[in-house]
Image 1: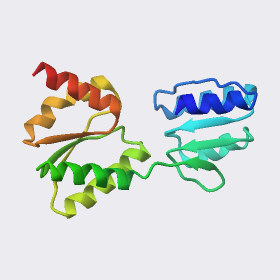
Image 2: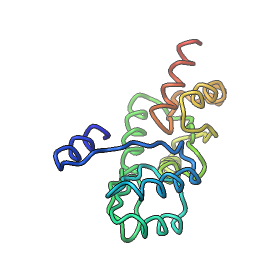
Image 3: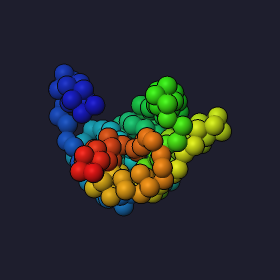
Length: 174
């Protein structure tokens, strides 16, 4: 995604600056206030700040595009997590899995809430799913792997690629 955004910015004679808030809403607000002074627009990826804080930030920056969040008055790009989870579960069922462990993302994550909602829908269709607290990173996935395996699940679904990488590292060690 970053390469695509960078290429589009360059083609428009603009530059891109990347800043990471670590999914911390307080840091997101601090970064937005700083960026508002120096930029003509901001792309917010998977932001965790409250809607009121986002509205306040919008009053300071004329152009904001949201990624993975729908709100009134903002343009955005949103992933269909429900369809994605449906595809993942269908594929795992085709492979014979009927019991999954889901390693959850951070509690305030809207994308994780959508994934959990879709997984609960799959559970209503007979798929057994254990929801385990995890986090967004590789070390979180690594640390949660033993608990996921202890559930007896035959497949692990991770909140993010980073979490999945941690799982793969731990499973490789085992």
